[in-house]
Image (cartoon, rainbow over the protein chains, first blue to last red):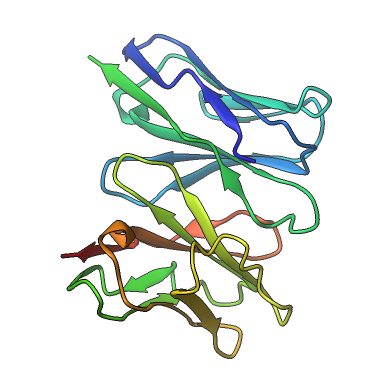
Length: 111
Length: 112
């Protein structure tokens, strides 16, 4: 089953913060976050493997609550380069390498 | 190679024709994935190869779609008797020991 992302779209001014949520109805092995700019391939941001784990990548970080089957992506002090569509993908069950992606969250950062 | 490569980058075909899309994964990556992305949509899983194991074909939308991976490296996705609804960007990804998937630039397929 496809994870559910919220919100579907976010519009920010440079320097503002945003949170993107990803919820699943199934037990998760891992959560992966990707960003895709228009006309380009998705680019890996981070992977979270443990319940409650939080990882950071410059001003982008994420948490993974295994019990709630939910992950959140935090973007702080947004930059113009953060614009794009953010996808979460979850892996679970026997084909743990196979990802099922959410429908995406469109993030637009204005000057 | 430095990254995942796919060919062709663009393919325009007529309805009913067969097409073959190629993916060259990152050298040494044992896992290879095919996804489909329709205009403005998310990533739809198609098929997954892991080493010498039987592929996970659970995402293939119909028996017109098939894929093979020769020698544990290059993969070809074949679509027979193409339909207009097959028009999409077909993305290939590969991963090594860390499960991180690295995507290729995709093949944009247009069925007229």
